[in-house]
Length: 321
Ligand code: UDP
Ligand code: MG
Picture 1 (tube, protein in one colour):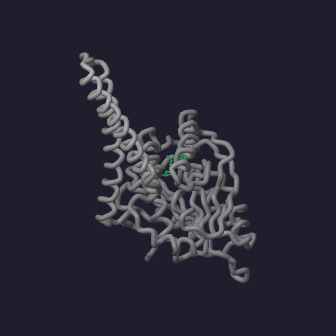
Picture 2: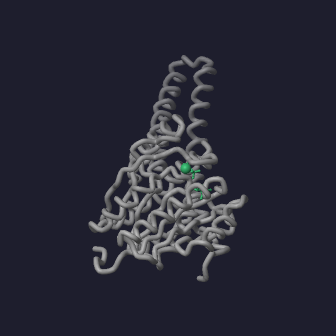
Picture 3: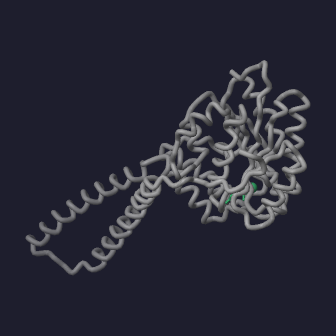
């Protein structure tokens, strides 16, 4: 249970990639929320909003430095290059874990309703170590994204991955969980699938998703597909088992085919079967190529994991380490 005597130190962590249009509109949301919660004695005055610059190529980092200079509750770290949303979140979490009792991650574009922070903290005070934000509505997302995401949650759960439906990365995690989580050294990070694996007492809180205040989403269809494939292959080896199953099935059918052709040969009924041959060939080679692709995905992941490269490098901070 959280220590009732001492107010918890909260870090609001937000990843930013080329968000110079967005930050001037949203940074005060984070700052004001921290100030408000300090005032109501919900959190400690040592609480901070931590902005993670994910290798932006616009003025995002300069802006973060500027607001950090003016407000002591704002801090920033900058990654040496763009490492993607998941790694940026990870960098923020690992940076914050030794300075705070509890973290909340949320997007910097105003899509995540900041007022859910209060309810997440209430759940934390009740003894939960992880609180997943669940979106009620998905304002601001295209129909394609909504359909794709529904299918994806179904698929990943069918493949044995444990993810909370309609949870993006708006989440409260205590430093206790983060300390346990720091032993998960994998390079392919898919945070929303990993926290359920770490365990600890958890619950959910609902929130409304709004439109992005400015700029455009960084998740193109191909990036979403990559995240989806990474999510499944980093959590489950079921796809490989399915391939083995298909292999056994095709081998069985081929065996019957061989017996049939030998029988027809001896019966003297062999006819030129071009069409059936072509169909079989296309079908089997299609299956083989897809199977190789899936296996290749795992081999590639194993290769990247064995290298043990750093998942991110922090090049600058707005404060001294
Ligand atoms: N983001 C990031 N690195 C990236 C892409 C996105 O840090 O390579 C951040 C981005 O600035 C935002 C959050 O991740 O705070 C979610 O991104 P976005 O709003 O583009 O995605 P969507 O909400 O459309 O899924
Ligand atoms: Mg967004």
